[in-house]
Amino acid sequence: MPALAIPPARPGAAYRLGFFGPDQRPDAAMEAQMAALLRRIARRLIRAARGRTPLLRLVLPAGQAGAEALLRLARQELAALPIALRVDAILPHPGATPPGGAAAAQEWPMESLILDGDPAEPGRTRRALGRMVMRNCDLLLVAWDGASGMGDGREGELLRFAARHGPAALWLRPQVPPVLLRDSAAYFRREDGAPRGARALHLLGTEILRALIPPRAHPPHPHGLLESALLRACPGLARRDPYAVFLEETDHRGGGLWAAYGFARNLAGRAAGDWRPWVMPLVLVGLLLAWAVVAVLLAPGVWAVHLAGVGAIALTWLIHRWRNPPWAEPPPGSDDYWRRAYHTPDRLSIAYANRHRSSYVLVILLGALALIFAAIGIAIAENEDWKLAARVLLLLKFAALICMIGFVAANIRGRWHQKWIAYRLLAELCRKQEALTRLGWSLPVFELRRATGDQMPDADWVTWHFNALLRAAPLPRLDLSTAGKAAIRDAIIGQGDTGLLVGQIRYHEGREAKSNRAAGTWALWGERAFVATVAIVAAKPFLKDWGIWLAVLAAVLPAISAAFFALRQYSEEKLMAEQSARMRQAMEEARQTMLAIPLGQPLSSQDLAAETYEIAMRMLADVAGWAQLVRVKVVEAG
Image (spheres, helix red, strand yellow):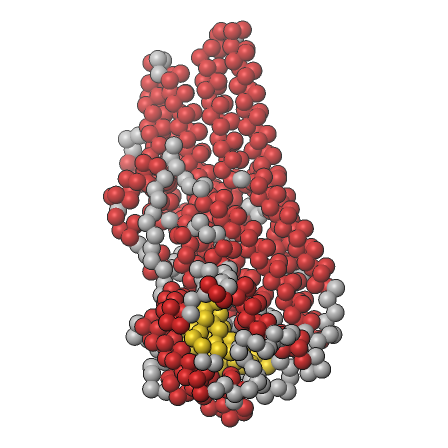
């Protein structure tokens, strides 16, 4: 079997058509329905591909004459069309024959997923076979006469299960128009109210186009006057398609100004950390301050001083950029499809999170500095000896306000906030799918919109892109022997800081501790500044000689207190600590459950996959809640 492909930045048009039916060969009327449906799907694929060659993947179970008939019809109907065909065979146990036999595997590109079923348990094995077909397709065709086949693992049981939990499900019956029991707009339809015939096929065609064509850009909803003015001044920002610039970023540096949030959080959390990344930024800030003092106060008219200061700052900046080169993607591996798909949006999410969070830290800091400069300037304005210093403070106040506007405008123009959320959602989807792929499962295509938040229309392209990656991903190569299942379980649980469970447990342990410390520190210093303000106001009548400076302190300390409380409220550290505590406990329980699964039994891989799926959906719900929270945390100048 060839090595797994590396996921493209923009996957091409692909569609997965699954089939499940009785062991008997379908009659001529049923085959005519299947051929017409193949032609309709092929036309929609060609239309959505827009000049490129689309891929149709037939997800077929072994041992069914209907699956072999669908493969034969696909060869006949698609032979003259510009469309590629690939067969994904689902085998119930080792030794089962793929659809069409060995000759079909040589004639057409075919990949196989082999379950750990037991021929001695035909009902349970057939049920796992049908559900595995359902979990790896975008449209499930179920051939069922409506009367027989209601037992365990039969066609009727799978159809009812798919109508509630699966992808789009189309019911095919002899001499009866097809019935669409599920699409993305309706999670379950009773047979008497479900569309049928031409109406069902029309809705199905619309569903296929919606799945294959990227979503349109949504009009922005400005927050505040500055964003409204920026959108009016740059109308291209409002019309920009988010998918058109998706994954185009190449610079992932996070140092300099964009390390402000991490620096403040580490200090507030009293984390020892590694001070080496902060050396060059601190040197740069020191040079800026030294140059400002020397050039403005000591030697305002000496141009050599200005040139030397600018040269030193530029040299320090170049050294910092040289020591922090752009992030380079790791070389591809043979099984890195979902890991590579996760890696890029994860790094982009971190980069944009640093920019967005640091921008609001800097805005809060600059706001506090503007108030401090204003208070000191008012206090010394009447003293002739301090006239120059008062003008400098006025200029610094004005510069702080301009920088605040600049940070807010840069955040809006670069869409740091929206990209942070979108890339985080995409990275988490790929992380969960990487774990599920080890067992042949997939995240539910039509449930993702609910899992990632129905009220986030600007993130529609995230779920669309993930589903496109899912349709283009090859079948996983599974070793479901007892030793193989133990290795898969260990990989999902993980060791050290790796793996879905252990890595996340360690992450949430660290985030809970650091968030609690940061929130407590910011609240403590805010309260101290407020208490000091009350003490100064109370002592002012008794210290009349220090009246003006006490007034300055009475104005400065509330600004400092407000800055600390603003940081605490904006960062939501306490809420993140509570979320981490809940998720850590849930993943500890999932780890214990996985360790208790008897891997030597047939189809125990499905029990392991079900537990992995449950924790993945719980983690996605937690991410969706986080996204809904931070979505309203926009950066504003006011």
